[in-house]
Amino acid sequence: VDIDAKEAGAPKGELLTFNTDRALQFGYAEGEAKNMDDLLQKLKLADASVQYDEVSFAEKVARFLTHPIVIPILLSIASLGLIVELYSPGFGIPGTMGVTALLLFFYGHLVAGFAGYETLFLFLAGILLMILELFLPGGIVGVIGLICVVVSLFLAAGSFTEMAISILIATAVSIIAVIILTKVLGKRMKFFKKFILTDSTNKESGYVSNETREDLVGQIAVTATALRPSGTIVFGDERIDVVSEGAFIDKDEQVKIVKAEGSRIVVRKV
Image (cartoon, rainbow, N blue to C red; front, side, top):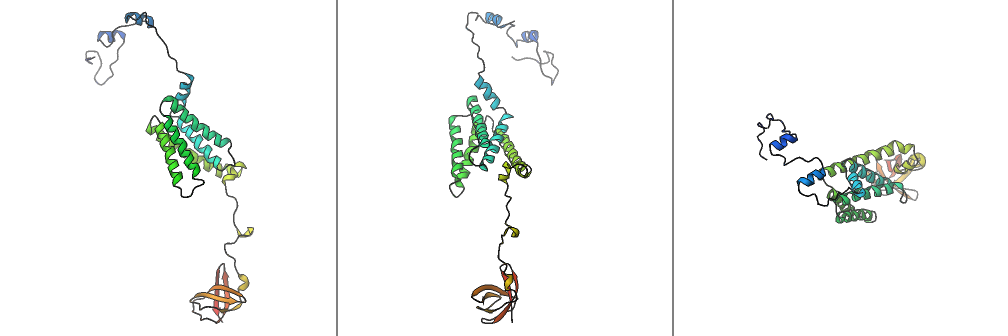
């Protein structure tokens, strides 16, 4: 309807608002009905059969599961549950929670009509490829699987932007949660100690990167090769790689072992 805003009483730049009488006056409405029966009478549809559709329980659940706030929560639970499951023997509560969250995500989007079964199949194929990566070398299979999972999430989404934000939120929540579980709770709760490597290869535990031959210091040996400045000496029945203090030493010369630091043994010509 072509309406002159000034004639209808709306100041410039303001919204034009009608009550029933003014809507009828300016031709924006065709009539007024008190109730549904009155409306049907005026439309000459009094004998029509009227059916009322109600939202089913499945549709209510789907509406809840596809809410912009619920989606990142489901993805966060899924990612965190699966990460924890990787560090747990067998398949337990964290893995069940993660899989359940993913199933709820796809169920809601399937019922809502955002996703088709091909999207679900793409997601399952991605998960299968990521599992195969545990047994195959190279890393390519795992990368392809991860791409399939991410693409399936975007294909199932009603909004590309909302899904991108949801994935970023889920990733951030998972990283923060893992840090908290390992750094804070890991020292207090036995379960989370599986995330933390507490063993160390220190000298007190009997681990050494190289054996220090301190027993050789002060011993006299003979050069098996020329030292320029590195070479080999013979001490008893043992051949040992050494370096001189800097000077070149010919073969078959007597040398004294003056220092032993790990694998570095220093000699001096006698």
